[in-house]
Length: 269
Image (tube, rainbow, N blue to C red):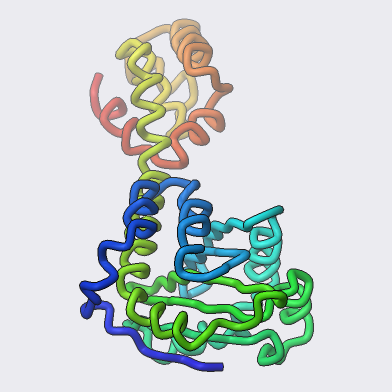
């Protein structure tokens, strides 16, 4: 295994204008980015599989994105890597934990993977000869860009390795921005969806739903809003019908567990 630390602040001006890097930037935050990067990175050298892994170092969560030239081998191997916790045996993980605020480039061949099941499921099953990983860690998260070359093409050549070292800072910045945008979109999507749908609700309907989500009974809501219990149920049923949901659970799923949008309705009368 070979490992190099990458200075994320030092960017090589000669590679910043690479067209494939700039085209991939158009897909930032979108699920299409891995496939776009894989297609465009062929200008650097043949790569059969690509994956992006965004993982919390405390084990709290992990997101996988992957693309393959053909089939979905990268995604299947990546899911196995995540679900079976193979990252615990990964040299990249050791590097990131040893230097939690650094960026690194790691080159690993199939025969260098010591854990038999990890080697079989994530290398041999896909006929992977070598993996080139760019990784960065900050604020308790590790993000890696993994490029896989299959046996027929052999390992990465010296000129390719040197070229990748020069591009590493730009690529890590691109992937880190992509994951940040994707996380922010995932957080905002339920709220935006609720905002669009709730525009069809009356003020009373929003007030009733807000209190339902906080566990209030129809009697409590009726007393608070000075309504009949039957009227409360009418507001609730009509609002759920307009939103296309069923009761409290459906609304919580719509909001993604975030009640911020309903807090204002709860406070108003």
